[in-house]
Image: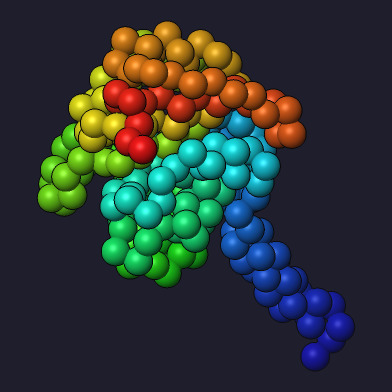
Amino acid sequence: MPPSSARTMKSPRRLQHRHDRRSASPRWQFLRGFIKNPVMVGSIIPSSRVLIDKMLGPVDWETTKLFVEYGPGVGTFTRPILERLGPDAKLVTIDTNPDFTGYLKESIDDPRLIPVTGSAADVEKILADRSLGAADYVLSGLPFSTLPPGIGDAIAEATSTVIRPGGAFLVYQFSPKVRDFIEPHFEPIKRGFEWINVPPATLFWAYKGEPEG
């Protein structure tokens, strides 16, 4: 076979191998999701481990039976949450992007994980349809300040409905404006900030009544 023919036959395989590696990369999946729908993805770069640990620090993992995550993306928070959850607890992730939902299903083999494609505004129906009851905690990195009009308010109200008394809405944002959405539904609200993240993030722990203990 002529060398040129051999190169022609090998080229598609090399391209396919590069495509497979790129598709399997969490960073590539995250970037693709951002490009596809930047309004629903808060940042082009996944959150840092320092931010993750600080955001999840106040969670009472021993009593947590149901954790909900909005906008999980490629699982930057999803995996650390599963590492901390008890064996009989559940984690429901809700994302409007089916590519992210499919990626989580394929890359995380854990019966406690329930990935759902849908809107966080429909969290009540999503949990009710699965007979999961009230959530102990809900985590969100959705960019409330850039969501379509009315969506941020609907998400905040629905979230306050599904969280049990004493539970909390954990929110990390790159704009403090999110407080305008959550303040009518939660009290007390504690605020933090994390510089070691790109970009730096504002953190909120919004409780539905005083936390237990």
